[in-house]
Length: 167
Image (tube, rainbow, N blue to C red; front, top):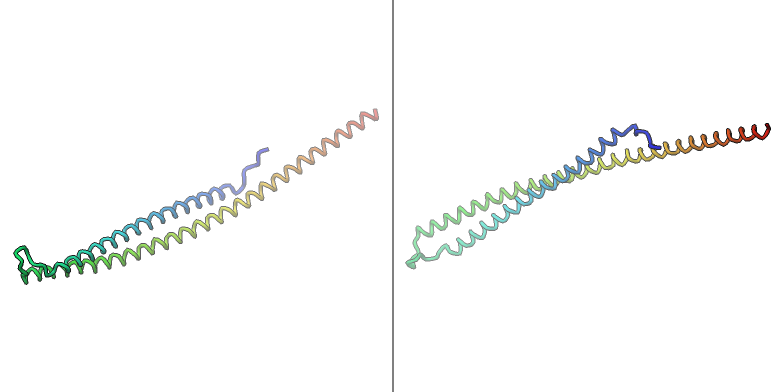
């Protein structure tokens, strides 16, 4: 015999949906973290490139021109270029610090999403446990009814057979 509709089925369905939503939110949080980490790596790579460029410019600061001469104006221009690259490195450091904060926020979002998933899972498990107890109780009641019915049938058969024997 098929069990009747579970009285709290709507609640169970809602909790299943909440768990699925929490899983999706966690997946989105992980994707967001990956995006932020990739951006941080790109910024750090750009900073490394700028540092290498600065070192290269410093190494060639006093290189003579194609005529073998060292022009003061060329040296000043090269110093200005080095200063410009250094200012870009400082800007890159700021951008990296900001991006590191975004990565930390994304990591916190993951922790929050994990906590929400755990809570949703526990909620669902509680209602599922209630459903299992309800179903076990229903089956027990059905077994008792069947046993009572079988006893009534046996009793009726006994009474009938007795009545037939007395006739």
